Length: 98
Image (tube, rainbow, N blue to C red):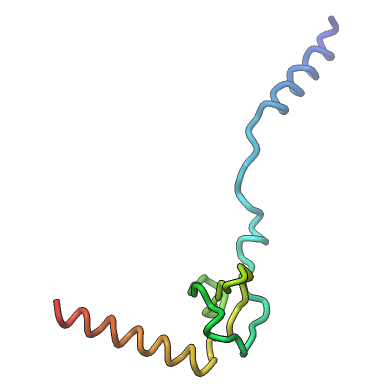
């Protein structure tokens, strides 16, 4: 067998068996989850709230709805501000009790 052909075959064999990286390209990692937000979401339709604070992105609130859809809620929404205020007060009170 020709030496060049053998070298090419060896390189191809190594290339096909190397594990593929699971890391995302940096351009995808740095993107903000919420590109647009909604102001009107019925609180009765919300199953779960997630709060994300990532570098280079504003505070993000993601609501998982009962129909399994996810929407980004504007953090300045009045009912959400009241919800966060109540949660912080409850957390402060529970720390004082202990």
